[in-house]
Image 1: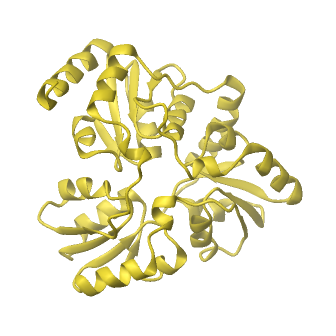
Image 2 (image 1 turned 90 degrees about the vertical axis):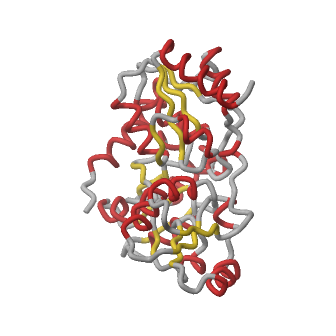
Length: 304
């Protein structure tokens, strides 16, 4: 089936199923283009809540579908590729987290949204890369167990007086961006601003002109007087950047800054997902209730 034919069939089934398609900024360009909404993981889940659609097709990885299912229990949430998982989310386990909580009984657990529903249920509050510092600083506890990303934990630790107990996890895509990569690109593009995601290593963030979440990167590039940018995150964001500010130039930090899991969903899989209503993402009731409490606590924190 040709791409144009695929797109028409997807649109037809979307109407028939009363479905909405959500795509993460890191997904394939053609998948972003057929989506009703493109954004970061939490923003898309919040968008799912606002929708009147019966079916949510989430073009991302498993924890994103779970977040939508937690917030939208009355909707059918579909993940077009069941094997699309987040390596970082898989680096934290429930038993290990419980042991850490026993070792630090006075600490509160802050979990990045890039975690499974089960880990969210074991946590006090969730955070995003955009609000992690504010979330940690809003807590009464002086000690914080931060899971699963040690790089985001280090970023927060440098901006709070609280003791951060990091989990030894990381995003492989961001973690393999090296200081040498940045210096090489800065030498090649001396006029370009370097914007980096806080999942990058601390020594990489030290070289950044601006540190932001995926959406924050797009807003910065769009509003900045600069005309060139070196992008320190997954390469899929370049598609959104070109759409937001098409007259500017963007350079991906490395040819290796590509998440295989985020590229697993293609148009064919979106079509099959709508045809067969597969793969449905569900979260057990008791887990969903506790995970939603952690998400709700985050959403009540006022961010400047």
